[in-house]
Amino acid sequence: MWAICLLFAYAYLTDKFYITGRWFGPIVGLLTILISSITLLTLSFLYIVRKTNRALNAKFIKLSLIPFLGLVPFFILNSIPNELDNKIYKVKVTFIAYGCECANWRILTINGEPCEEPNCEDIFLEALEPKKEIPEYVKTIELTGKFYKRKGFPKDYHHSEQQPEKARIFQYSSYKIINF
Image (tube, rainbow, N blue to C red):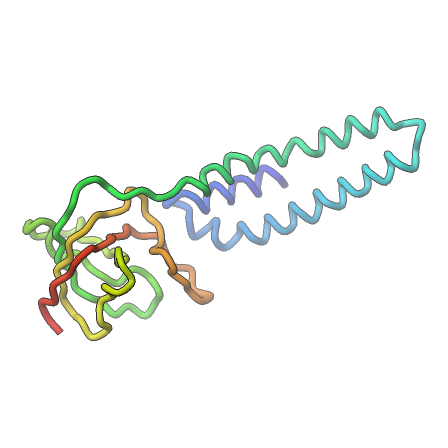
């Protein structure tokens, strides 16, 4: 059960299997925690009640704690911050009104070079400063800023029960409205 739990935790952290880990990870994680807690409580009870087998029960308690070590890499990977790329880009994007909470800004040009399919990707936008938020009515905009190194979600991104996919995030420092 622990192996399956760790597999879904890893899937959640990777871009390729993110949705699978997002759906099944919490279910398997709760079952794993429930089974592990019952096992530890039972072994602790047996350790206290059966004084003749304390050495054996102590070994079983130590063995049952080993799978918890598998969570250490998950917490380490999850705590690594998503860093910004060093290069500054000038990106022209257009808003696409998808019926989901996914990345809805399509790249048109990067540093003046037109984007060609299939490299034209949808991205999330994140303001460097909160007071530089893009107005809601904007259709096409030119931004200056940096991409994050890994796909993910912008800071303060909240979604409902939908399971959006991770996308590249562009943190902009300035923008120029092209089209409303």
